[in-house]
Length: 79
Image (cartoon, helix red, strand yellow):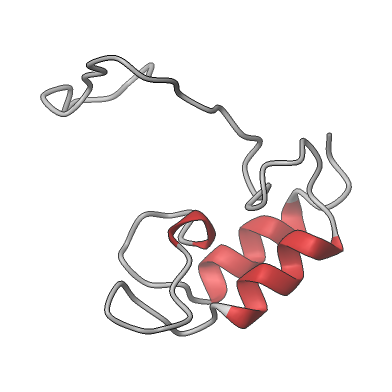
């Protein structure tokens, strides 16, 4: 990624990668109400919680919070 300083974890050893639009937590190619719903269901969770959804943690801070919801809202209806 342009401007990335920590490149030590950028490895792919076989398999596939999926690139999603920011806010497209369900991977269907558009940021819509299904993404909002998924984030609401995962709201205020982290990896040890039962409703945790790592795709909803858009800022990668280890928790689904309002920043993640805001990112989805800012990208709503983008495909």
